[in-house]
Image (cartoon, rainbow, N blue to C red; front, side):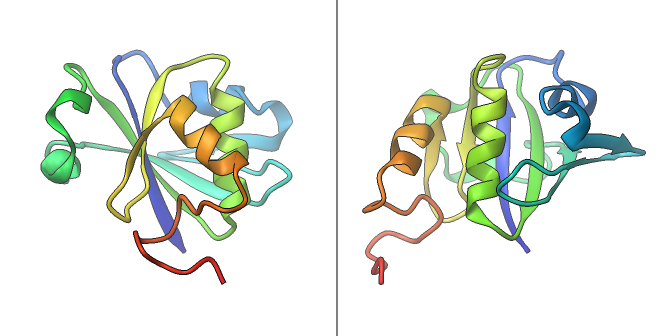
Length: 128
């Protein structure tokens, strides 16, 4: 599994809100939301971004004042794109790619739409 982190600058977003954006393609069981859009299955869990060190390498101007964060475990990169697209009409948020890049929601969608760019790869990594 691979992971990304979603960070919202608000405290009123929970697993149920994330699952509700996907209707019957998602459910919450305990502390995990399972989301299965067409791109693949993901598991979403709430996390403490401060305790986990999420912001240690973030640009200062992107660190939210009141963050709520979720770690997303995924196999298919298209699943993460589907997740961001599904949440985008409802929320503004940041995506930490876990490979040294932090994207706003809109930046992420622009990068994901460009087949020449890889949001999930390290800088300088070949696309072939």
